[in-house]
Length: 290
Image 1 (cartoon, rainbow, N blue to C red):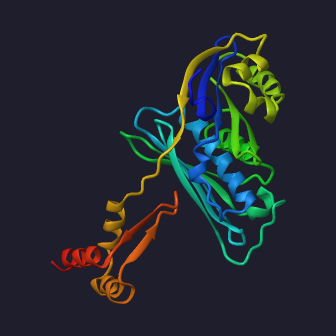
Image 2 (image 1 turned 45 degrees about the vertical axis):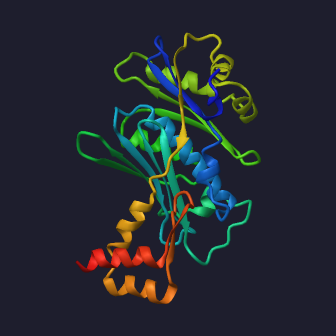
Image 3 (image 1 turned 90 degrees about the vertical axis):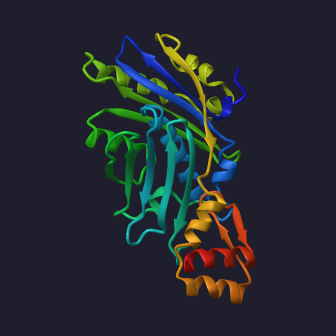
């Protein structure tokens, strides 16, 4: 068994049903993704979005990237929550809240997102034009929201089963999707969805991915394609921070030098900090002034 069993996804196929799927478990990447300042419900949403992004990204072509984002409405406690994932299944993300809202540990997705909140899926092909789909947030669950997206925007019946264990900070789930133009694939999807819905969170997080598939589909012919590792990989760097500072007006940069004697920048995605002392800022000021 690979040593990334608890941070991996596995594709599978039912040849005789015209249905494909993925099963995933994620744990370690959440150590960097989830900030201590996030309320419990925000952590849960970020974990579910991570699972969804992996399940969807597993079907992408080489070099593509996908971003799944919840945009909060006008009266929503949530400003945004996003996950950006590459085709190699490395991802990063962040969330932000509007001021003036209190979210207790019992808060739900419905409490976090007002009625005008939406989920946006953006795909960035390596070669080709970016495309985007938008669907209203279903207050019942992110799974229901995603199913509505694939039904309405893609005309591709898809089922999601996402489980989250907040005590151990791990999440996982299953996606089932029809293969177009196969007879009785909708009936098969409904049948396999009933089976998938019987997998408990305890089983998902205790069993290996293949053991879970065997537990669910012991009477079905399932073809599996091997596991792929999932990792958190942020895009931040000191060079990116320098580029941001170089966009400042020279007077603003000089103010940082004169008044603060340096500055620290913190990545909103992973929380890593980058410090620029007075000498470094002075060098950047010279570049701006040239």
